[in-house]
Length: 297
Ligand SMILES: NC(=O)CC[C@H](N)C(=O)O
Image 1 (cartoon, rainbow, N blue to C red):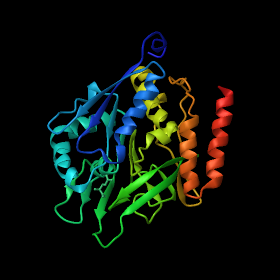
Image 2: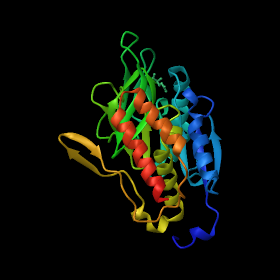
Image 3: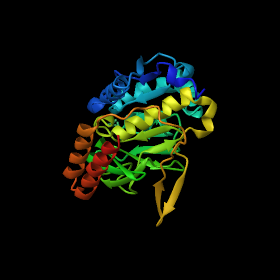
């Protein structure tokens, strides 16, 4: 109940899927970031690795993470995801558990990944989207990337051969600079309930403290304010503005369960990536917003 949580030590359990197979570009750094941000607030974050052969019992977790991998690592994982974790994953997501899936993991949560060679890898179909690798003649999508996420930015690094196309799935954001899902339609990532797929490595969360906290807040609200679950924020609203899809970040009426942190270094890293992409106005406004919010604390 909402009135109880302040008197207890908050704790969360994160299920890290395939930590040995899917861990490109330091995806594990996302877990370290979540752990550190919890630790600084006196919140316990237990991390449980879920490898090939392990079942996923949704009631045991509050948050799930799945990273990226090369095609050869994805194939055995795709099979295990279906056989051992698919039902648990679906149950968790339908129950609004926050899930972050990066690159190869994102591809496997959509309908299928068609590699340049070899058979299709069947995905879980959580996101109404699919991915095709167009062959070695077509350049990979590689480089730094910035996207618009609601009225904020997310930054990261992408490296994927697969091009993802969205069916009815909402994108996580719109590409400002970089390739995104397919280097054609400016969409990046996908959302279903509180599951977020993205091509942003980086690691993603160290340079995007607002996104890290968003995931933690979703997990905490879901666990501790379950009785008020209609107020739990979720990315369901989309507004169309000048023909382009703009996500409206939901606001919750519930008080935040996260104490503010000094994220000066994180925002400087975020801004410096924006600058590297030539996005000077965005970089300046990110730093300005950080200074303003910090003054209010
Ligand atoms: N970085 C990744 O996870 C790569 C995913 C996939 N194998 C691709 O190249 O499209």
